[in-house]
Length: 422
Image (cartoon, rainbow, N blue to C red; front, top):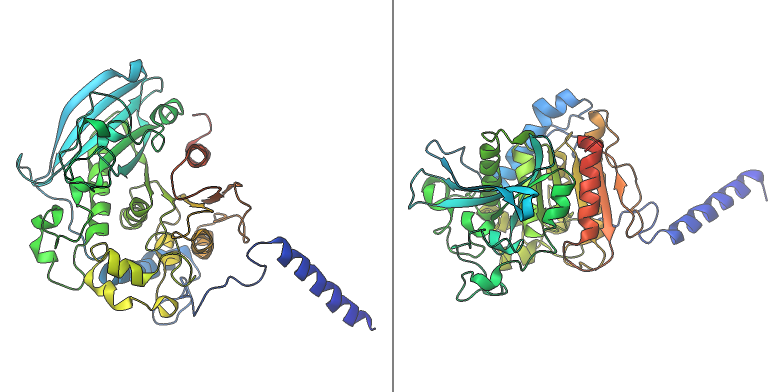
């Protein structure tokens, strides 16, 4: 056997051994169809600089997703008013200042509104960074603080303690594991949350009961103002408030979400560059996952079960996952160069952990245009092994949920980017 043949044989054996040691293979990403290139302009020109990305490619991608998936969103309402209806400096046994802020979107007390629950740590010099995200069952659900107002908005009948689609006292504190308030405060971060149903109820109501009622001109059209865009828009309105609060470092706002709220957090970070960091936890299809990776939730299911999530134009892509001219790595790339964390769970079949990893991987080249390390690995890391770069990632043991392990990684990631002295 010739030396060249021996070399080829040895190389092949090494590749085989490495492939067997990796649960998803070495050289193939198992993507069905052609994955659209994030760094190629619509006219075919290759993007090679951050300036090209900022001035040409990013606007192209953003406009496409506004037209074909998320829909158009209105600007900040001119008549919007913030009303601080609670300001308690000795909350949670004295470790926090609690504020409850009502956002009157059109300035009317009887109009559509959103309630923000904000906790700020008392032991840290202000202003402080704040993590903001939606909850699923009302602000009163995140802990047992009896001073938090019970939500009066419609919610799913599956909500523990809800009666006839509305919260009761029994819903108080049902989501304490998902929201480790004291842990977050002790790490030096504020925490803000809103009930997503304040902005838009999560069912197909023809967009009559959410903030869309204020914008009828954005409805009877293909790129209508749909639920996911409305939730992202509401997150931006919370940021509008943070810019008025001197106790909040509005330059260090971290937008976070789990599951469908993770989709909203990603779109908020993509469309509003004031958000300093984005954290997606198991956001799945329409969030961090690649549609072209044909596992988990797909376009067919989303369009059938949740037709209100995305704009009318998105319906034409149902069942065409492997032929889509776009995918979610392009949405993640819109967040560059700001820090982005993508979290998955091994047992969350619908959200597809490997599809989420691949999306982060294929968004990373845009981050490298800005001279960051992007995602610091090319192969999916082992379960329960987090990696931290300008893009962070982990795949946790367990099912679809938000657990203490997830929060531990999120807070570490925030510390790395906002200063370890915190």
